[in-house]
Image 1 (cartoon, rainbow, N blue to C red):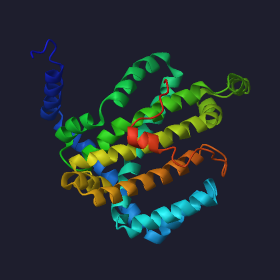
Image 2 (cartoon, one colour):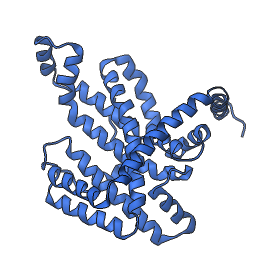
Image 3 (tube, rainbow, N blue to C red):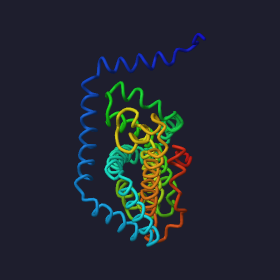
Image 4 (spheres, rainbow, N blue to C red):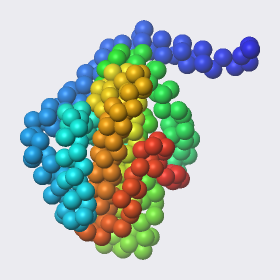
Length: 298
């Protein structure tokens, strides 16, 4: 069937144009992402297994409660016992690297969108496109621009996972009680002081929800990114599909699920007072398996 609008051809030509004329720029971006990912991964691998377990268990006990701390203990021991500890650490490193980049870009953009209506009008359809585009599509241009490895995996993960951070930061800033803002202005706060002393602290629960959803989406995309050589548990999931190995698929998939639950509950708790989290234990799995965050209008 002939195309009336050769949109795919235009996109393909644009990517090849970038490859021909801006290779140095993409090399620099790739080196920066690779440097961050290597630093995070090596830092995590340098932590002894028992110490990393103690950190997760301690934070879970402090922020959520003893039942979750017990669940975390059993989950991490099960991951170790099934032989997926090293892959889980690599996956955690990829997730954290992607999340760091997503938040560094997404939170300031969300603040800007909250402060400017025209920025919000421009950002909203872009975020809609980023969230609704099939996740696999992001891997194609990323692999063409950066080759195979964890760099294209992280880049595609950032594109996929950043929208919740932008949306929920913007939502939180815009929904701060107007009387509180006016009180800050009455006491002579500058716009910058008003933002970081009044609006940002009051918007923190919404921002932390954005962090939570960003981490969940990053974890789901990191698994898919194994198709371009990102590594971690995604490699085992992909190998189980290719070999129809049900046992390997179940073990590696279970490790992903347990890691997702732990990260979800801990990050969710930082938007609340310690020990008061009431969300169901499996609240993060909806984002993980659907690959979507809760719809929020920017």
